[in-house]
Amino acid sequence: MSCPHCDGTGWRAHERDGVRRVERCDCWQHTHASKRLSDARVPPRYARCDLENFVIYQNERLVSVVARARRFAEAFPAVSKGLCLIGPPGIGKTHIAVAVLRRVVIEQGARGLFYDVRDLLRVIRSTYNPVVRTAEMDILRPVMDAELLVLDDLGAEKPSEWVEETVNLIVNTRYNERRPTIFTTNYEDLPDEAELDSLKVRVGFRLHSRLHEMCEFLEYDGGDYRMLPANGGPDDLATLWKQHKGRRPLPARAHRPARAEMRDQGAAKEPRDPRELKWPGGKAGR
Ligand SMILES: Nc1ncnc2c1ncn2[C@@H]1O[C@H](COP(=O)(O)OP(=O)(O)O)[C@@H](O)[C@H]1O
Ligand SMILES: [Mg+2]
Ligand SMILES: [Zn+2]
Image (tube, rainbow, N blue to C red; front, side):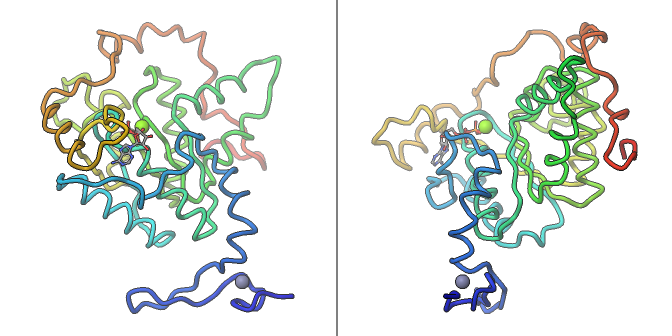
């Protein structure tokens, strides 16, 4: 028997804030949501993240970031820019990114995909093994084609020319095809060119300027949720935030400039230039 709400089409009209939209019907959601969610590769730790269970407290920036994320999810796929969530660890950047991703996957039926940048690079690297020779495009194609991609923890990977080229290839392809991406990063967007912990130095100037073209930057600070006692609430988070304000160290890393790390990397250990990747249909990297 076909669904009484949508006559079996899987779509139904819906009115929100006086605007008529077409939405996936619940019957369709139930059939397809779990499959699409597992395809999105959200890590189990974040499997229940949504914007409704995200605790907000007296923190103007955080409140506005959550509101912005909600508008993005509601407008999707009619969004012209992605988001770049910036701030210290533990303030819920990944939570918010996943919440948006899950929502568009569940409600819009979007093909969404989550990748921690380091995991993604590790997987791509492994496909360069000359013995295994799995097609690298098996990995890259879904990343480039996902209707919404979350790239988590940008800049956490050890910088190298290959890393830069590979991330640029992915991001530029998505940019050219107008596919939105949500990035998260611990590295602040500092104007000082000499600041080694700035986003620009960590990811390279080309990607940095591309990010500005394709994303809205949402920088915020807050209490580290992981320090919150089990019975803690919004007030405790606010207190945690006040205690740590202005002295939140970034995650420990080599006390050496990113660029020096990069120079020291043996070029021979890196796979070949990602631009040489062969694309299905014989096209070279775009
Ligand atoms: N405001 C919040 N409300 C509810 N859970 C939160 C909040 N902030 C962080 N968390 C939870 O704390 C953990 C760490 O948050 P995460 O999103 O990984 O932080 P970040 O990506 O900024 O380092 C996650 O399990 C997340 O769901
Ligand atoms: Mg995170
Ligand atoms: Zn239906």
